[in-house]
Length: 69
Image (tube, rainbow, N blue to C red; front, side, top):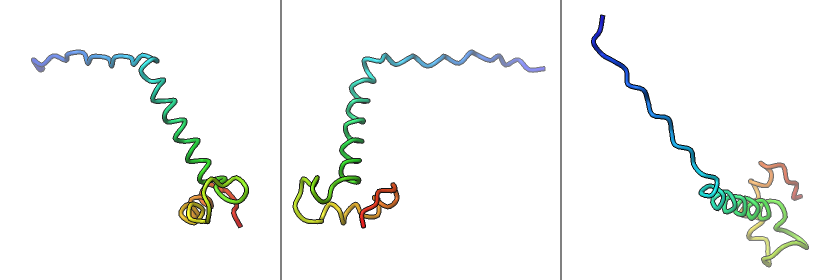
């Protein structure tokens, strides 16, 4: 047959939760900010005057199912 031998592949090292947690919190905050701007940045809840943010994110609002008009 063949003289080659297969060496076992090393298993990946587990990542400690302490290293993932800050990135998960950061990603969650970015997601909440994005949902705010896409979902509620118009009308009484607006942080910025005018309709610039609303118009910039208009198509994304419809894509995610947020009604706006």
